[in-house]
Length: 265
Picture 1: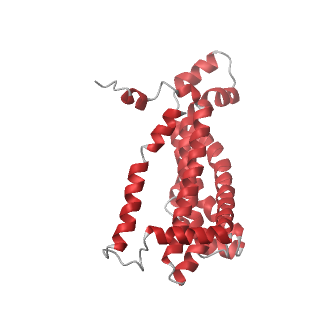
Picture 2: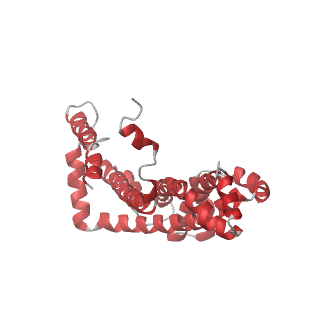
Picture 3: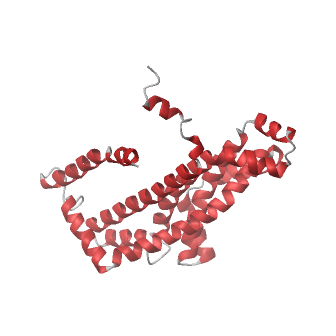
């Protein structure tokens, strides 16, 4: 616990330096305060938005949309990625389809989402889903293709059925890659929700920021951006803690631990 806290504290000096630079540049006239207000002004604005309840409301709405779209994308991408990774014939049938869908950026889905689903939560969740599911799917698929077949053959030799081999051998071996894709997908989900909320909804952090832009309230825009960063960091932190609990068996086996101990000397 102490070691983990010490590791997080190492990033504090860089964060403080960035905040001091942010405060100093507008104050010294290097940057126009209209376009980049000093940090203290943004902090005051954040306090007002918090006490009024406006910021918590928009943040909660965005969070619910992110979790909904991310959960749907996870439920689709993980089992489908494992299935396609283990079945080359099936993968070849859908590869062209996936290859054509992947380059389509999430904002490109916004017009269709509004036409199909109207205004509100549903188009935002749909855009988050489309923006995350393919990236996670490709990552899980690639990891499933790389599972050591010798482990699976050993399982078959010991009498395991195919479902048992997938559940007891393939899935545990893929968990590190799955958690990595979940973290990637969660970051993409926040990017997608902000894009969706700028055009398709009437609440959320993206809506707050686009309204502030229209009113030239740069401090509010920065408060919204900082809120996204903090919430994304907290969710990622939760995923990493879950990963450490689930993958406790990896402790002492990871390469970075060897380098941390100076094992390359």
